[in-house]
Amino acid sequence: MIKVENLTRRFGRTLAVDGISFTIKAGEVVGFLGPNGAGKTTTMRMLACFLPPTRGSVTIAGLDIVKDSLEVRRITGYMPESAPLYLEMRVHDYLRFRAKLKGLSGMRKRDRVNDVIENCGLTNVSRSIIGRLSKGYRQRIALADSLVNDPALLLLDEPTIGLDPNQIRHTRSLIKSLAQRHTVLLSTHILSEVEALCDRVLIINRGHIVASDTPAHLVELLKGAACFQAEIRGPLEDILLKFRSIRGVRSANGSTLDEWNTIVVECEKGIDVRSELSAIVSANAWPLRELKSLPGRNLEDVFVEMTKEEALT
Image (cartoon, rainbow, N blue to C red; front, side, top):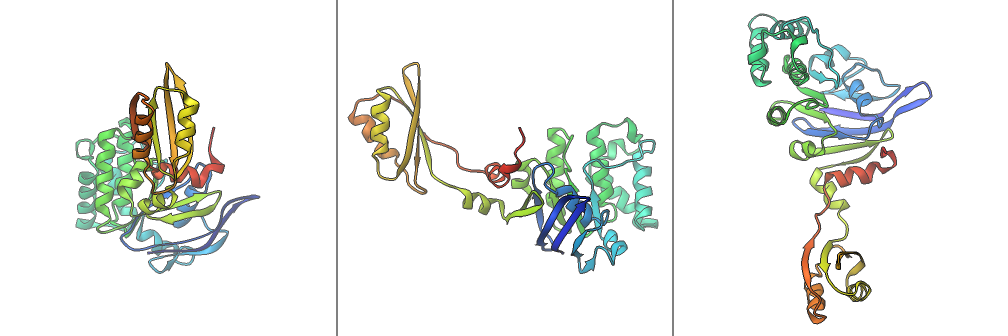
């Protein structure tokens, strides 16, 4: 569906997107992640034909975004992060107007407007003036706008921003269902959203694609040492010395509070030393209050690792 080759965009001396290449298959739901200023929105705008590339090429369903711009727009639905809406119009009238601009007419226009109003949870406010509605409803109107022409490709930039938890759940369910008929490229800062919705993840950092894989595989690739935490009462230095002597232990460090030591033991990948730890504690008669494995890596850890040079303070 999407083929990007050496895509570059400059703004004067600033290189916003630096020769990125990737492909997205028809029917995929792909998450597009990156810190602020990494090039996500610039890339989305180029794919949506709102911004010409400085260099490189993009084809969508075999159509070039520069040479075949109008055809590409007909098969693409784009929801920008700050979607411009006509605040003085009523929801239903606005969507009819947008559908007409996108080439729909007659029964086709009526049916599509009714469908997106229902699917995006706008039935109760369809006759309301947009400017009087909450930000959450405006987000849903923008999503309905992107869907009204039933596009083959959906480009969604932060589609759940400003929504309450119930609205987020509804929107996630809707986006998931769209994969049956649409290809979706989803930009978001909510990493749990990507794990729940996306077949694959693209991570962009400083204008470069730094990762492209399934969320689960990215986590697995980055997964490092197993870690265990114990709360033990006893001489801290003796405990650490004995724990460090266990085969497969990379490090053991701890601190003391109210006579209890909290000790974190890091092991080589795939090694579980809890039985050895327990045996040492028992042999030395040290009171043990807790012994547990620490949570493994998740997509947030992957994101931080891949973009740590861009971390904000």
